[in-house]
Length: 101
Image (tube, rainbow, N blue to C red; front, side, top):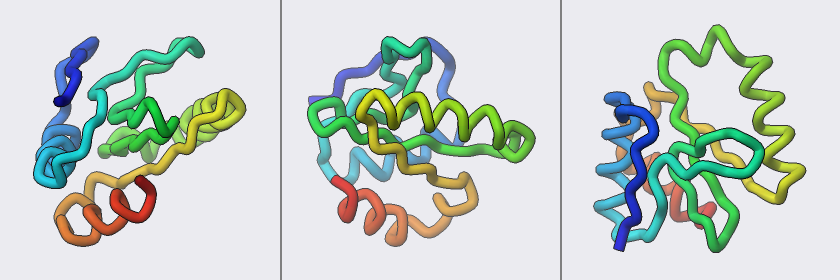
């Protein structure tokens, strides 16, 4: 069962990633809020693993993303970033997910 929370409308890349995760039958939480004040795109809460989908605008916020990742890692999260362009290679993304989950 997938727990869904939508603090923000999902982007097109997030919808693609969601479809990939759904096809694998994995349990995750979409847009999971954490105590640090961030919202994780896709969280495997029990394993403390998060997949963040980086769309076009992330190229302009690399420092903010690096700081965010640092804070989340200190809180015990493993952060895996997936570039929106990578989502065109569904099998590769599935491999990344299965390797890390």
